[in-house]
Structure formats: structure tokens, C-alpha cells
Image (cartoon, rainbow, N blue to C red; front, side, top):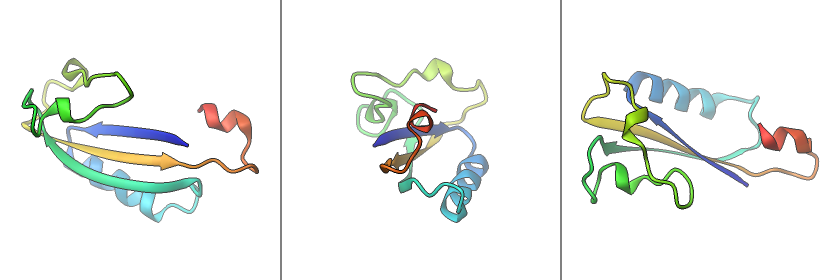
Length: 92
């Protein structure tokens, strides 16, 4: 399984990518997709610290574009690889 979180500052980009992933027949390894909202702050209840991107990795707000507003959007995806999948594709 490969678990991915993508963070967006723009709602239109977020919703467009989410809709594309839902409608896509190209991405047949995608088994889980969830979208959620969090605040662009250090608030421990609903801010960036609540969105770990990888084990033992914190969210780095310096990676956000300067025009990012007070709300951020996140897509969480899980790809379950099958025996028939090319091993090299798992590293992409």
C-alpha cells in the first residue's frame, strides 16, 4: 500500500483533482480517496499539526504558497498494489 496526502491552498484545484481521481478509469490501483479541510495555523486541534504527511514527519508551512489563505484542503489517497502491477510503478 502506498499512502499519500496532497495539500492544496486552492479549493478549485483541490476539488478538480478529487473529481478527476473519482472519475478516472486510468487509476485502477486507487482504492481509497478522502478529502478534508484544516486551518492554516499551528492550532493543535484543527491546524497543520493535525495533518501528519508521513510517520514522524511534521507539516512544513514554509512549503505553502505565499497566497495561501486561512483554510487548506487535503486529499488522502491509498494505492493498493496487486501482484500483476509492475514493481517499478510502485516507486513512482
